Length: 286
Image 1 (cartoon, helix red, strand yellow):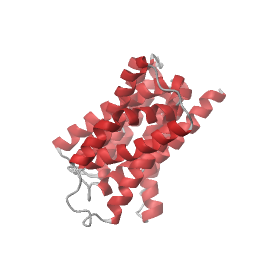
Image 2: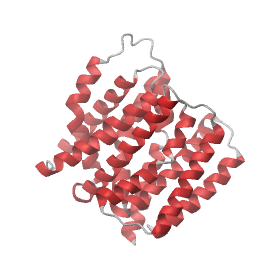
Image 3: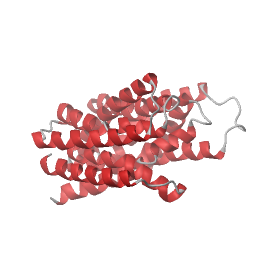
Image 4: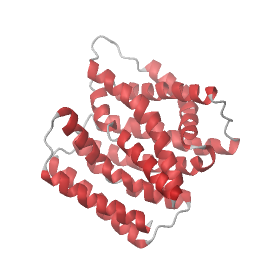
């Protein structure tokens, strides 16, 4: 029971950190191209991760772990950041919440396929209701749609769910922060080459909000958040703890209300209550 509780607490910290990712990416793509943003955030996080691995004298992963680490890198280091950055050129951050609501389902499905988990039927019921509540709320707030942007977000969600499940599976042996650090180091040569190839033509045209967005997604979204998230998935279960992602859009909107003084509608409070019940139900039957 203590292991499960620790997993949920760690996973919740990860979700809180991730809740600022899409708004920060939206700010960053105003000054940087999606390709440079994806590669630069990976390079910065990889350098920090490598310093941790070297400073704490971590043992290198075994050769058999390299394929799994490559899957993690493809899903969460390259795929999700790049595809969401490309999508946010066509849709708003608010509209992208529709697809973030599908991420817990994707994570749970890959938890079954890759992690060997077997949630009970009631779990899937709560998971689907929660995803539908988030998607419905997001659609009611945003009339903007783009087929290209939507397809990019679907692909991002699929790759991210796979990367989450594969990383959680590895974390049970290697540790959460070690998994994301090694995945970042594995992707570093390709990401560094891409960053050099896509350097901005003019640096003085890039505003402070874009730099702040880059800093956030590099340090928090790409590294620190995963330290807590992978630990949570490994301890509490991929399918179960993955449902906490349903709360991510509402935490992002709450942060916007507190920090940017944006209005918080009563519908947000009502839907959040429904989502909390769905998360609790999914945890019970996972």
